Length: 296
Image 1 (cartoon, rainbow, N blue to C red):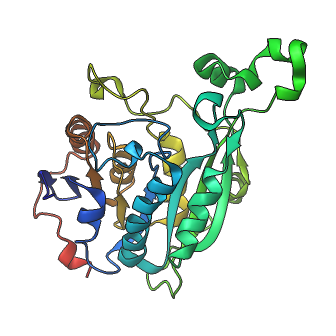
Image 2 (tube, rainbow, N blue to C red; image 1 turned 45 degrees about the horizontal axis):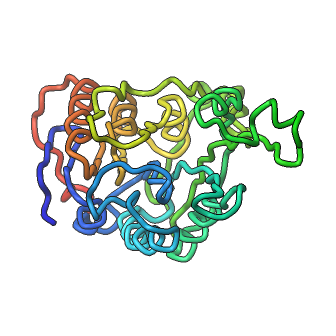
C-alpha cells in the first residue's frame, strides 16, 4: 500500500496511509513524543479494510499486527523520550467468549511494548462515570437491578488508562520548566495516579466523520488528557507522532501548544476531517514545508 494522500504544511504532516508502512519510512530517532489510542483489539470496527487493526479475528491476531508497529515506534522515538498509549481493559461477552468478565488488554499492551525494548515508565487511571457507561453499554454488572437479583455479578465501571513508556538512553533534548511555568499545585495534580477530572465530553466533533455503513463507535481522546501528556513529556517545537490519528485530536492540541505533528490515518473520512482540524489549530502561513530531514 502506498501513501494514498498527504497534506504537508509548516507545522504538520498528515498522511492517509497504513500506519506501519508510513512509520517505517520515518528516520531513526526523528520523533520527540508519541501519543495515541490504538484500536482496542476487535472491540470496535472502524473500516472494512484488511489493514485495519480493528478487523482482527482474535486478540492473538491483533497483537501479531500491533507488534510490527511497536517495533517501528521504538525505532523512530528519540532515546530517553516518551510514548503515551491510551487503553482500557475490555469486557467479554457470553456469546463471543463463553463467559462474562474482563480481559486484561492494558497488560497485554504493556507487555507488547516491553518486549520491543520500551521501559514501562508511568501510568495514570482516568475515572469514567459508571452511570454513563451503564446507559451506553447496558452492561449486566453495572445495572442497579442486578444488585437486587444477584450481586455476585455486579462490578465496578471500567476506567481508561494512559500508560507511558520510555525509550532507553540519554535524553539530549531536555524538557525543563521554571517554577512559574509549572507551579507545584499543577505538578501535584498531574502526578496523581488517578485523574478524576478529565472531561469525557471534551473531544473534537466526531459526527462529521460518520458514514452510513460506519463503525459502531469512534472515541477521540479528550483534549485535556492530551494536553496534560504534552505538558509533561514534550516541549515547544517538538515533533509529536500519532500513528492512529483518527480525526486529529492529538495533532490539534499539539499544534495549539506549539509542537509540530505527524499523523497517520487509514480511513479517508477521518483523514479529511483531521486535516480540517489541524488547519484550524494553526493559522500560520507556511514559509517552508515541514521536513523530517531536519530531525534525522
